[in-house]
Image (cartoon, rainbow, N blue to C red; front, side, top):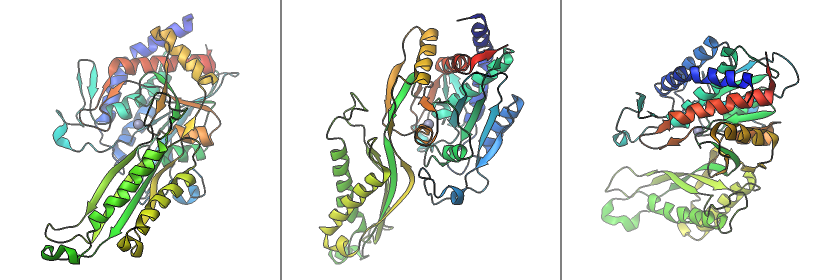
Length: 421
Ligand SMILES: [Zn+2]
């Protein structure tokens, strides 16, 4: 590590308190789907204050409709946007980088499970608590301050760096895709998802869908005279479990050591409106993970076939076909080699700072990485802080690991983009 790198790391350390304070301010703004306005305001102001005035990048479903990565959704994009800023190069000869993070969070419910208000961030024994603290507002703070440290240290970079924060990572990926389609891309793309100091080389594909089933209402004194729509969902759900089993039947080379990477989650189930009435309507929503190499069209066809064959064996369902709608995630999986130059360099930066090599990580969830891997031009991976209870009660992120993420990313900038005085 040379003198300039040491100065850069000192700048990160001096900014640590400010970085954690900023992460907490992001956590204090609830930002579930459709409610991102206030967190975006905080973010926009912060980027301006640090000298990276961002552009608002909207999501235009009409313009993106023909893009293979676009996920049609039933909600609209009025007044909702992503933020992107490019810090221009101070010299030439380096390689460009892009930091991406998402500001949307999943619901804090059930609130009873929390020991504190999920939107009143609190620090206790080196952990920051709150919804989104780990996934992934602390990571967003880390990328902002890794870049800010370059300027605070009075240094420059020999290549441009893009700072991008997006919406809808948790449901469609349309935020990151819109930024990519607007031209924001780089030779290395880094996302501080809270999987710890590891290098992500593979992730599963994910699709979402909704199934609606009709029944016949009847007073409960004669249940046999009606058709129970909720109970008609059971065999359909069982068929999807069977599809899940077949996807996991053989170990997959992109997920070594993981016996069941492709999960079906029955996430929503509703129907009926009265205990003494046979329910005439039911619906369920599912999320299915699938292997890299299988296209979205392939998995969609498998889901359609599983439900279709099941319906054929039930006289009611055969005559009253369940409706199947795909919305939200239509994300293909991917795998990249650990030997990619950017991934190797990131691993070396981690090792120089921590003394130990970075482990390879295989994700059984999807992230916005896929947009960059499938449709971008760069080498992309996730490396981030250590968090616990993401998508659950009492979410928290380890503050030491947030600082380590920022230090590693700052060092990466110096070696990938190149420092100039
Ligand atoms: Zn996330």
